[in-house]
Length: 279
Length: 257
View: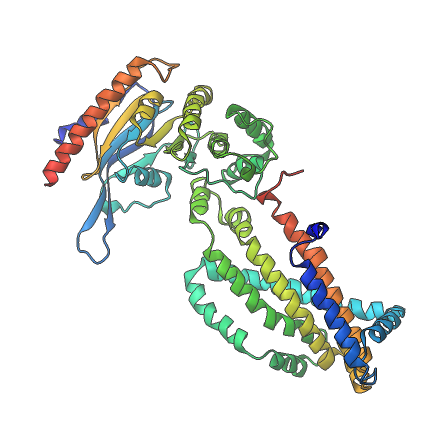
């Protein structure tokens, strides 16, 4: 079990930039059917994502990372009596609801709409004025490498290209926060590598704030500025790591390899401790 | 035999069945008077006679427009109620039993009741079609709402799509296969109901022609009207509805133009 001081260091802010997402001591319980006790999905999770930064949450499958994203995005509700809170701050100067982009594990496109139509759906949903649609659509399709595919239908595209459309859809609304839930886990490794590489490039241009969830430490180190490491049972964040490797990064950079190795070691020691503590 | 591959499988057996049926029909008809059981050749002759008169087109149009009105009304009301049942649990429990009652109520009773209540007005056949057809449409749409992918609804909610947008761009497109099958069931039901309604009620249209020739005991003329109208309805189904369906689902396999 991690001592309580750990949470204090976790909350310590990075650079002096506006906070986009703050999660404070968030706890989520599920009712176990027929049982008195509740299953704890998230156990006092705290994290902050700063404007323009790339934060990753890394943890084993079933540690509740997707649940956390779903609460932040509003897909899942959070019962305040469980404790803690989630806040997404809209951009300075812009009132109202924050704009949230979400790239899921699968593309979740509306297959009956063209590629362009899928981007327009998000723009319409966000009540972005029609006169900028054309510009947004071509800008972000171009950015994800799908310029010229406006009139094509998603089912004509490969899995990787469909995911690019989903990324363009999320970017088109120019979100305050872009949530990504293992977006490359359904792709083959070669496509996934290319996508990761391109994502870095896209983000450098789009200047988006990102919260990325993955179980792949290598992916997390390669992409992120900050990594939150999460364990199961208890579903807690036990460490926050800053990745100081300068950008642009190369996947074969030895610094990235070394860091990955170190984090893997740390992960196993924590998971083992938890297993022992549990008996 | 090789060039037969040009046809769809099942084409040849189908063709043989039709030819055998026509030959048998011709043979049996030789035993009866044409006004009692006309053969295919005599029938063809009568059909040409019927469609040689310009008045026929007016009669057919009257019936087709009634069918069209009934169809549109049933689809709209049926879809709205089906959607309500699918999207609201409280309404589902309430409407479910009403739909069941309507589905079990004998169709012929509606035809009689509509005439008694509304007399020989245009409302009678329209109401009959509506009451019989819309429950089928509702059932289909309700079934369809259960197959709607929740993952896509969640996606729409993250982007804060309002209810109208979700229904228009996320739910209705997923219901299209169910709406098309509802439309085709609705057509096949409603044209038969309209004929019955016309026979009992409004005394015009193809239904009235059938009654006229029935009273004259002219089976040949009844069949000429009945079978030709059946062909018209089948053509509407094949040439309009199926092509429309094909166009709607172009996203499944084709590039847009």
